[in-house]
Each structure stands twice: as C-alpha cells, then as structure tokens.
Image 1 (cartoon, rainbow, N blue to C red):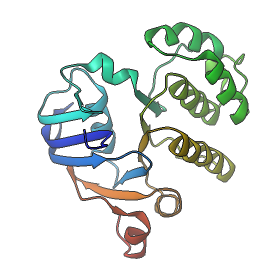
Image 2 (image 1 turned 30 degrees about the vertical axis):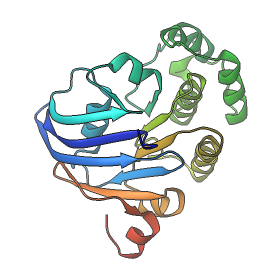
Image 3 (image 1 turned 90 degrees about the vertical axis):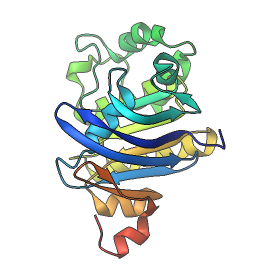
Image 4 (image 1 turned 120 degrees about the vertical axis):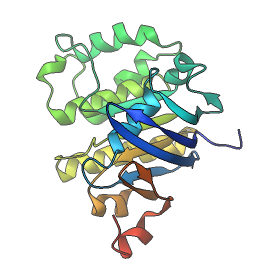
Length: 224
C-alpha cells in the first residue's frame, strides 16, 4: 500500500453529464489536501465519484489499497464525508442519528461521538434540522470521527462560515492528523484559507486536475 490513503489512477468518466479526464492523485496520511477551481470545474463531481458505488469510470480508485468498485462497503467504513449535501435524519437529534446510522458501521464508538460533540460545543440532543449549517458540519465531523475514518472528504464545508468556525474545524482536523493514520481531502474557493490551513493544493479546471503542490507556494504564485 506504500502508506497511501487515497489513490486515483487514470480516472476518466462521466457523471450527471460532466466529464472528468485522467485524474491521478496519491494522498498520504498526516496531511490536508485541497482541490480548488472555479464553479463547475468538477470538484464536487470528483468527490461524488470517489463516494458513489454507481460511478462509471475507467481507471482505478483505491482507499487503503482497496478498490472502491470491488469493495465499496468496506471503503465507506473508513471514509468520512462532510458536506451540506450529506444526508442525515432531519427529524432526529444528533444523538439519535448517531445511534441509528452508527449501526451501519462495524466499529462505531458512541463515547467518541459524544466527546467530539462536546469538544466542538454542539448539543447531541438538538434536532438535526434545527442545527445551523456550522453545527451540521461539526456533527458530521463528529460522526465521521466516531466510525474511525481514515479518509475525510470535505466538500465546501467551510464556505460562508465565520473565522471562529474555521479555526475550530481546522484545529480538530490537525488533532486527528496527529493522533490517527488519516488524511483530509477538501474542496475550497478560499485561497487564503488554503494557504494557511492546508498542506497541498491542486487546481481543477474543466474536469482535469493539476498536480498537487505546496499550498503556500501556489498562493505565492497567484494560482487558483
């Protein structure tokens, strides 16, 4: 596996009318990777391609050496997704969501969930639909932590959030990277955030992904 968490090799395909071409990446534990680019460049499509069992593409996507298409269920056990588009039980509390949906995971830890929620200042007794967008993102991160994710996918999770939320979120992510063998792949338009908070960034344009480079280097060159 060569210590690689997520690997894409020559991934080419089409999803909901959008074509992506020859996507290659190898992400190692301990780092926050960012993908940036204008709206419609294919960032969210790339996330969905990694996550969806029904994605059609040539090439290969592997998580911890496991081909996503061959063993999608096992890959999802170690993949955490944080996004406004992520679906949870709207009329249930955070605690009820964790209790019910946690059953889908082999190693879901409710105590770890409670601890993460407390650390982020979100009440597990609050109904999901009543949570603010920031609270939902924190809940989703706590849920992903509780099933011991190794790959964290954040799709525009910080968009529109205030500075305090951003600091708290990245503090949690950095703590995860120190204590767990995991990595983060996020999409963002905020180049200042990318420069300060992420390690590597690649620019996506019209379904093509450039090479990852050190985030501060890309920012200094005015790319993205």
